[in-house]
Length: 321
Image 1 (cartoon, rainbow, N blue to C red):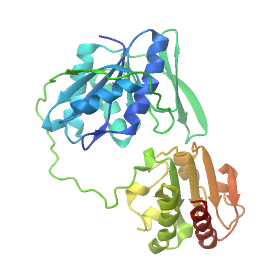
Image 2 (cartoon, rainbow, N blue to C red):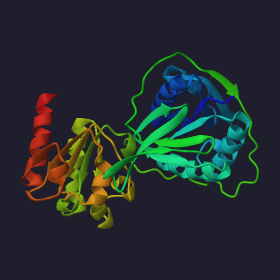
Image 3 (cartoon, rainbow, N blue to C red):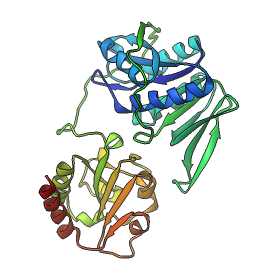
């Protein structure tokens, strides 16, 4: 079968945004290689949703429909995908650099005796091979990486690659990889209240750090984020203090985000935090310390008390309607 494969990601039976970004990126790579894109979906009861991947470049979708795939588990997914990849022999396999994609890519590379370029921000084809660009040294340097094994595996940073519609419905082919002996099963899924957009997919993020002083003060960030249509993040210090859940943490030991707008409130700008949000398209820093490192990274700086600046921003956004 060969070609370029995309491992699509789903949650609760709906394809995630990163799946369409990866499919769009795969289409460009496939065109440069003179081949086609095949998407792979593991899930349950979502055959109709699979066809949408055709809009973003997938010519075919291999769909494994089983209750065991409804919720992600490492062993079920890695076993099934390794079997499908061995049978199809793709040249390139792309995944999202999400929590799931990061977990899965390493497992697949080990099972397939190859390696993976992770958290990639750009892709190109040279001499028929995929060359991926990824950050190293906490984002201080970007390196071009060539995976010499086969298939070449790469994970793509969310919100970096554009979703480009380039086709219609994809042909869906049902497959039944062997589940084998599973050592894990999902007994319960506990979700945080609110149903907010995952940080890695958010286009606008309002984050707070140690300068927020206490958990209750994050309410002003929630208000601003709500009016902007965004979501709230936090620095590690705020999470360690117990002010926010760890799923809100942005940084080297949290989530790497690439929103269109990142508003940092009361965040000093330690290198670990910058590694997680430094590739944001526009960065606004609100900090009363004029020497805070975050100001050096920001596109727009406000030196002032965040407890005065943030409410004022919310008022102005309200005026704009």
